[in-house]
Length: 206
Image (tube, rainbow, N blue to C red; front, side, top):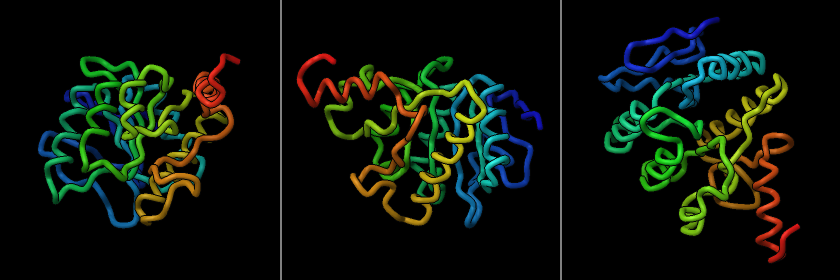
């Protein structure tokens, strides 16, 4: 089912289990017992694939797609300041966005206490974010690979839903750390990220 595009740069999936949308009034789209996933992505094809993967996986979620980085920044800014508008249960960022980049959004989100327990993922390598990784406010598990296969999108949908459900149910996302991100597996894990971890652990290039 195609996404409905809006002049404000946001697109929303046309399905009852997915959100009907976000507008400049910033109304709360969170429904009881249905987690909200925000996907900041300017490629409508990738957004549609994630929508279909959520549907195929039987996941009931509100999927909000925001196509421009500046629109996403405004959305997150209001969510951070309005106590009656809870943050989404999971956030996925593309790295390359118009006007405001995924890196800028990641830094904003992890600099705001309102999103401390919100899992945030970005399609990027962690080596590009060494400055904020050193502060400990960003998890290495936030960095994942954008799939080019249908199975990869199904795995992505499962990862996002596991993370969103963990936040919604107030349970630990991982037994090995206190970060809100569920650890990605298989092809979702970045190979360059894994190599960097090995380098950091051994002190030598592999």
